[in-house]
Image (tube, rainbow, N blue to C red; front, top):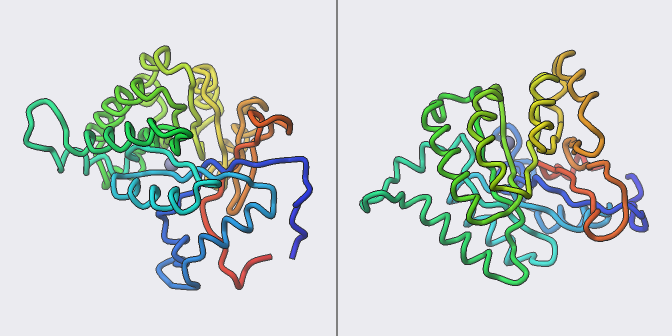
Length: 269
Ligand SMILES: [Zn+2]
């Protein structure tokens, strides 16, 4: 087993922990390999210099689950709040009876307002929001775009950094988000980007940060793209950990990194 970097000068902030994913319940490809072990995951993360994690919220239900974790591990866990494009349909299926308002989004807003008022607030970013045209069976383009716009409106109220998802939809993504960015000065991170170099540079031009992981290295074109992400705007990610290369130093330079899955004990190294 590799020696934990307990005394490392590098500090990490894992900004993409999808606690609601099966892997954190010990399930891989539909099969249960181990009991849920999130406390152990956090302990291992800390051993390797990862001091905080941000739990990615993808739906209203997910927000409630993440909130429980944040309450259980307040020192280490922060969370995002938002509805992922996969879940965009849920927003409008649950349309409430009141004219002009949406019950699902209103509930998200209320949770957000409550958390935002706490000092310190457990809310670290607004998201995960965006577009994903690979999985149109989960929500069609029109629904995704509507959800993205509606949530960008809400994001301007919270003034948190954005946590963004873009898959095979960069052109529409940019045309929707661009008018909002002057009202969202804290910018955002486009995570797990898997598009072309030209698309990535357009996103960087808007002032957004980019993260890459396994899905970003499946073609020569994607590898070429990753080579050109400006150093100050890259966040890399592999299966268990990693890193945005912005150096060590004071608290505000803590390195954000990403970790999607827990580690099956029998495969831990
Ligand atoms: Zn995503």
